[in-house]
Image (cartoon, rainbow, N blue to C red; front, side):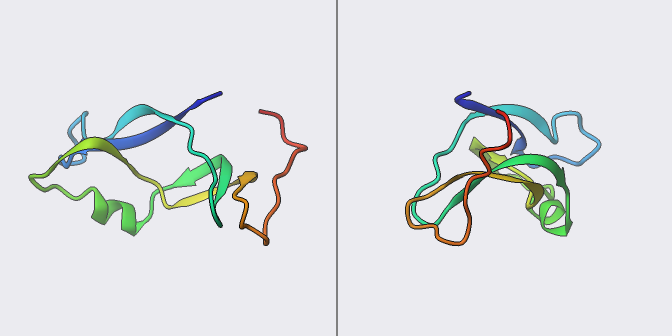
Length: 92
């Protein structure tokens, strides 16, 4: 699969506006350098997310993806990553 589902925003609207958070599809990133790519099983919203999406006048050309706290398994590692390994026991 070359795409992923995400929740993000393009406009910083009050949370009661139906367009304040939107479901989007993005290209699957590639782990490079020391990065890891995590197959997400759960995500939560924390205070950083609420501050990031607080109402303001700016409009994003590319949707800003929210979600700092996730749980899942390592799906891919960059070539310079030495502390984590992909869990190949998990199905796609």
